[in-house]
Image (cartoon, rainbow, N blue to C red; front, top):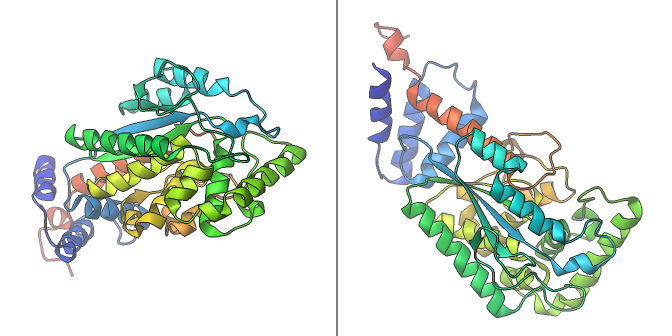
Length: 353
């Protein structure tokens, strides 16, 4: 069989019942000339992609989205970097000088930079902002209901546009000084875990700033306790615009039958929030790496992402979606392999034992 014939064979398995599709996927994988069970995690990832699409696609066509926003919590003393870094680094991403820019360029993956709340009047990249940053959640809710709804709807529309443009896999990243603090607060509110189990060191905090950071989260949770009666309320009260956009995007991916790849701690918390809203979103999510942030494991567990689904263990904590894009390239490689490796029938002309 020629290589092109195998691709045709794969792509002709169109929309079927989930059970019938799963059987076709298993038949395809078991027919390849690989040792049975020798690529188990990648077989599971391949299966998850196809089940999310509802068919076996010819190939992966990815796009990467980075949501950038500023956080009012940067007023607190544990933040070690000026808020303006969010703006300057987002400009850097847009102009091609950031890590994520290089990763996407090298791997020929389109990169979308979306401004959902940078503290500058002029937008950087795609303008989805409702405000120039959130408020300090130790004093008041992070955002108004109107601001929340604006970002939520704009992010969902962006995902619809990617589906219409022909992309079938989306990876997510984020940028925003202070967003490990907002993410830890959201995760504690969702799970009931204390800050000691959700707050990490972020961008190199000292022991003293780490202590202050835990206290900041604790104070925010206490202030908004009565108002946080739903996952959406949690996002609005102690989250960030990046988390709102990510959560909305993941649920929109589910609605559009688009599998998606998450990055590190912030995107894992967004997935946990999306899961709290609709557990079916777990079937569309593909983790990329095990961030070194304290709450990463708890966020993935809450979102029903088993440890074996996390492929990369490299102590990463960069953000931007750097781990997600590396995962996309691995997925493209394995997907191409499974749909192009010749079958055992093509090697052995006689019936196999």
